Image (cartoon, rainbow, N blue to C red; front, side):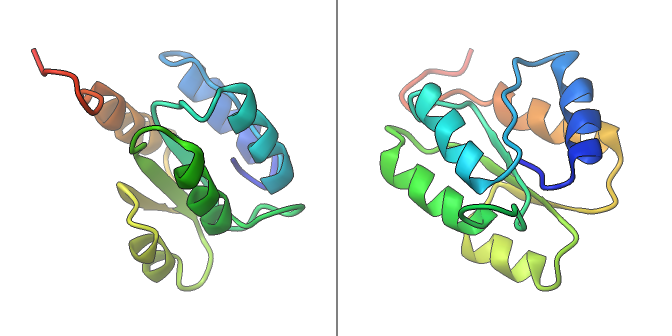
Length: 122
């Protein structure tokens, strides 16, 4: 989820080279996408400021009440106090804007390579 359409497109395009990616334009759309995916994403990449609907932290809190397992959350933000908010959210990592595409791809790769809860690592 990202509130800036141009940034959203660049990030999604880069991630699609390796991953299946669903995007949300704002917090309300993020809830719709999560429902479509049955609350079963491998990783969430979330901006804190999302425009319409819930903020990023609110979306993540609600997502966690619906998901059947713990999903790593990567916060991407340039918001003041972003680090403190991300820590309070118990995120997997925090990436500050402006960020390099490679930095985001590496983070998603790292958290999607980990075994899901209940799976045995090979």
